[in-house]
Length: 186
Image (cartoon, rainbow, N blue to C red; front, side, top):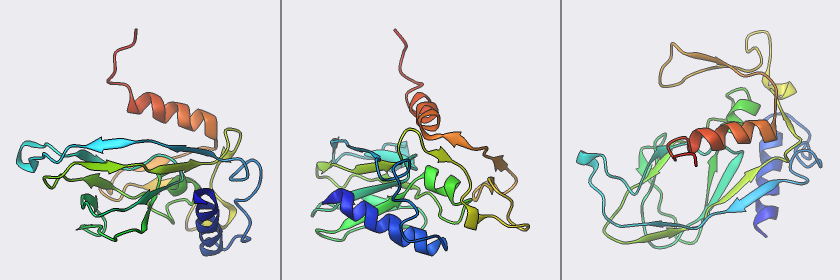
């Protein structure tokens, strides 16, 4: 069921990008996606004045993430500057890969988890295209005024990133290594 929801969301994204409704539903894209669920436990203790959060600010690096809600608040979206609290709903966070693919049309969702005195349990569903998918600027997301794969940082407006085409497996390996660089190698 959850994969069907993701494919439906991808169809809506394709239409928003002026692509064929089934553009992402090919074997090398989301026809054979990388999908994983991870169980997280966040303690209810936090102290923002000391920089202690249940989970600090971050963007997911895949294409999109789905998160089922319950009755424990805590997820904060930085673009809306609010807490999400929709009981028994799905929250969709867009990832860095989609921002790169869409040449900045879709923005990666910067979010964090704040404690509220209650333990919070979460099982997000992360979706990425297949390992062999080539991540490059989509054809409808580039023009003379919007060259492919040149993204300006929204927060640090002076920084420009240039993203060449990259195989999804390489992209994911780079991000996994960066995310876990603080762990000692043995």
